[in-house]
Image (cartoon, rainbow, N blue to C red; front, side, top):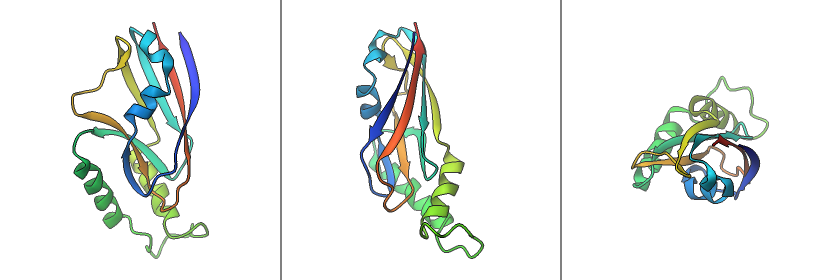
Length: 139
């Protein structure tokens, strides 16, 4: 079985946001898969996807603070500045963290660890709505 669909995520403020429930709710065919894979591809270059802590929101805060400190918007060698001071740092963050995830599916559910969740990293101050292509494959 192959299923592919686009998921639209509402605009969010800069930072990291737990989106596991939105992804699962947007995939009605997930319950039918006993064993398979879900591939998520974010269709943007200034945001990211990552798998990380799903319980303590301080982890999301701390990763955002870490990246803001190490990749500020006022680096003198950035040339790509026409879209604002947060755009080039957003591209750097997205490249470092990535824009794709491949997750195991088992018994109709994502096979995540106890404390794992899917995060959207919004690296722009005003990133807008984000789109994901979700490709589900399994039996």
